[in-house]
Length: 406
Image (tube, rainbow, N blue to C red):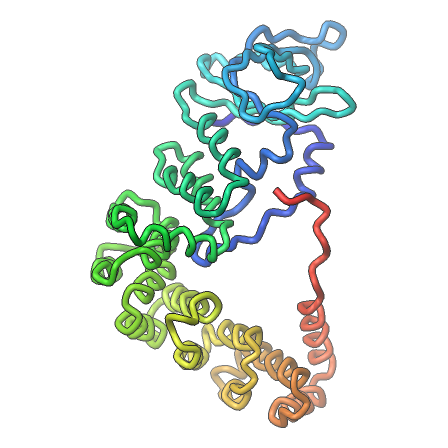
């Protein structure tokens, strides 16, 4: 694709003012705005061929002046201003690039006081499926979650990296409840699980997709698919630079007993790389926060205890326990303040103190937490005051968004 035009300052401001949604898929790494989401910022979007570029007669060297005709091949997002038109004149001098003479262009327009502003343009290969994909994405966006995600699922392995990346982002921003509702419908269609397993086995599949595909398979596959996932996890020739958490979750979903034992073996081995054990932590979080029907809460907390015993990442599960308000574990967590391996690691010591502060505030009868905070305050009152301010800030509701829902 891409030759992006420079945006006028006013449009840059509008785009930066729109916060990207937080990723909802627990094992996806989507970033930035999806194409269909970005469409809401444009008044209309056209796809076609640029021609007849002319400089401004009075100021031929001006960057943002002149005219260029856009012959319309496809209207991606319609507007009254372009109904029935075959050509729209863009108020910019946009000469053709001799290196790519056959490019088509996807052009985003805004109207300001009746004035046309083509604020973004993307060069697109003439045979690209992007215009059709984007048009379909716009139509799918307001539909129910299952219909919307089904559309994007069909493009996840598109050879066009822009299309496949955008389809992946749509899943990345989907709520897990939406993903689960979709995959529940797939349980009667074994071809979906077979397709997902094929993608996971394919050495050409991008590692960033493993997490999503493992999660989807875990939700819609059959128990026998667990063996296939286990084989992939045990494959010495496969490197999980990312996505291990989702594959682990898929294994547990398909075979809760064997999968959980395998997961405990990973998080309980301090010799394993930090990134591997952290992937295990992310998987454990998932079953506490999203699938309590699969793994009992006590098992989840027991797994967190195993991780807390490892000082190189203990702060992370301690922070989780604080956010989960598991104050019954106060003696266990605060007991690590007496261990040199933990107390001499500043970030771990701080997480223990934050847990104590939150536990004492939640229950003044929690004698262990209250006494721990008292001693900490006597030793370093400024540190305690600072952490209390952090906890107060964490409890404040987010400011209301000034943008409209997409």
